[in-house]
Image (cartoon, rainbow, N blue to C red):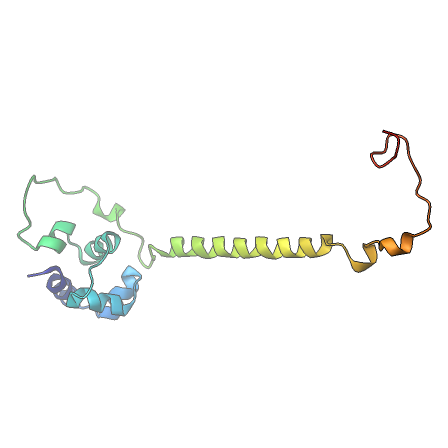
Length: 149
């Protein structure tokens, strides 16, 4: 029995639809369907979420009930500590951080554009050299533009 068949059997034994599993693992229903048909394989993170959802170890999920036993590990004394609180979406925090970072980048871009617009010289601020013909220029000692070097 392959992983895809185990995923389907575990889902059906839990009485869940593909949409239910997708919502709890925070993936699309189509992703769950592809896992169960063998068209795609879940990532390691999604396998851990599925194991938690179905109450099985990763070995049981990947290898089945007769998992290859190298060394028997003692059972975890507090398995509930590993599970997120009921109703919590484990990937929601990461998704929120990505949206927040995108929003901050957009805010920085808009702020830069506004500051650039404000600081840009206006047509009234520019001097036309043709308008300065015949005017005297004051020579200030120590000025870099003076003729006294």
